[in-house]
Length: 83
Image (cartoon, rainbow, N blue to C red; front, top):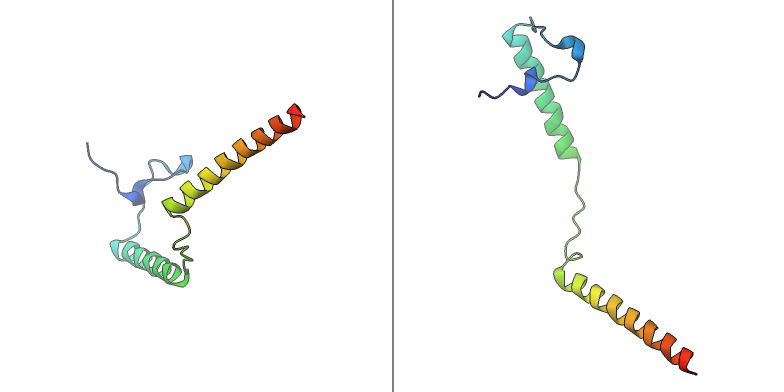
């Protein structure tokens, strides 16, 4: 089974079976322009990296704190009910 080229894939139902009659030079120029635009967009976007905020240690600490608070609340409610 052969792979399809990305340029042949379309979502427009009316375009199925049509052949692009543009010359190879025009197609290459369009592809080059698209690639340049993509590179410019890629360079202009700056990622905000959140380093050190999602460590496993912090997640487990938060989970244990939540469990402790739940048990503490249940014990308090039991003590209040006993009086």
